[in-house]
Length: 197
Image (cartoon, rainbow, N blue to C red; front, side):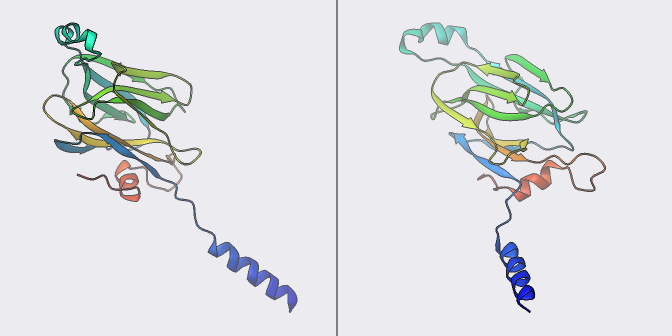
């Protein structure tokens, strides 16, 4: 009888433990004006394109004031073999990275100007490779998953006709083929914090 009581108490305590959320959200930074976006696709992120605008005249003119007009004008993510739409614009210089098998984005960092755009964006993978675009000035931000084994699933935020005005990151597990679980970033987005639009 005592054994049944012990087992019952043990099982009840196991059920009472909170289940760790397999997804997390890094809250958006930036001004946040413009059209809302959230990237989407099936499978793991396998490539990234980022466009940066660099107005050299503006930069030269304001150099001594520590100002610049460099900012992220747009980006695009590839899920599996399919590229997402371009969020923002394709204006300016393009930076691109293709990920290796089993490589994932595990950190998103950069700088933003609270008055207008995301100025600098760095994507870092679990293999130590990075893609960086823009100019590192203004206010810093650093996004990373809350749980071990998570990777970048989607980016959300806002953009206007010139560039990205805010950005946030959604993290989660990618279930590999044959596991019977969904792999859509839409499912990930619905299970994380919904961005404010």
